[in-house]
Image 1 (cartoon, helix red, strand yellow):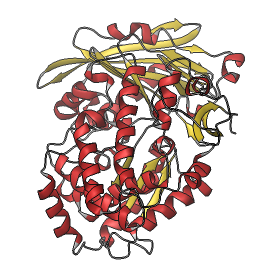
Image 2 (tube, rainbow, N blue to C red; image 1 turned 180 degrees about the horizontal axis):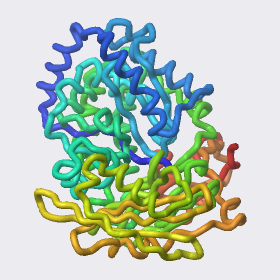
Image 3 (cartoon, one colour; image 1 turned 180 degrees about the vertical axis):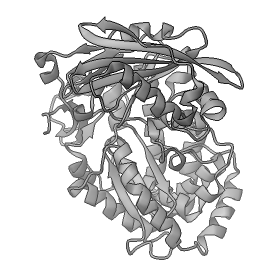
Length: 499
């Protein structure tokens, strides 16, 4: 189970001149990273790694760290070139990058795979280093919208029922109980300032500043494609980072304007071949070892488990839970220790999510049933909130004598499991053949040969839909782009399962 949370790079309403002035004032004497902030970040680091699937520890991770330190060395943050920044590549299937006070910068393998060259990598790392240099986390607006998985209904329960209890933590576990506050979005002005700082840093490090704009354009195209692939045109289909901090054409224009102002546009390093050599073979999308999302289906080959979300709902695959969101309710799929007693297990689930408030819930005796041959039990309790009542349902499955799984579902009062009836009824065991057929997707860097076209190469993409659109977005190309023999392009192909 691998969760999703996305990069917070945004457009800004601030005027270019004011932002540049603010940048100049801040870049004169950035303050050193405090020992207390560094110690806190180091303490949080293992939890972040757990939430985001671990870190790339081989040559690829070392390469990203080296580029980050090259950019950090010119940031004028004391110690920037001597290891005060910790740069980590995360095993996350979502385009994401964020910075943590204390000098910790994170970038996901999925975002890495979208990039075209080393200069674009430098632009993102510079942006995140800019957040730290400008101390944006300390000035983050208290009104920033929380990036919760369970949405507004969850917020009602967190504020009115759970307080600081385990229920509040569960409702926000999509990006971790302790990590959520670290990955909130910044204000538009802060994002724009980080853009300006990042462009300044990457330019000083010798890179082509135009790469910042090209990366922003690629992110915008990827956002549009992701919404289309989800089969939705409404706002819920747009990743939360894009809703909170839109990747607008205006932002790309300003990045280009800033690049021109440096006097170094088109003259710095891009290092495309070196970069492509490093991302060749990187995992793309979900890691099958943690389960995969295929359309409306969640499939876990190692657990030999699968289920299907109803139409109108979407999934986010997390390290500890799979979260399902829709307009009529929210749910999470997870597991707890199991001693063979289903009634006790359901009580344990309520205790884990409601904490001390569990005693305030009237929890009916669970009913037993069977789902696709799997013994199951379920019940629904009603929770009172300041805005009214909501139903909290638990539906549990006895997988074997030592293992159980469950859904926690939140719906408007009186609906109970209602909207999720197709979901809870879809849980099934995967056959050995089905499990063996689930393979990872990996990035394959190929050299264009005579006769290759955009269309012919796109047909090799390991997707059932939108092959051409995915290929074009991955390579920053247009449908009428002409490829030359010897050019290098990226494909997403099926790889082999890792142990």
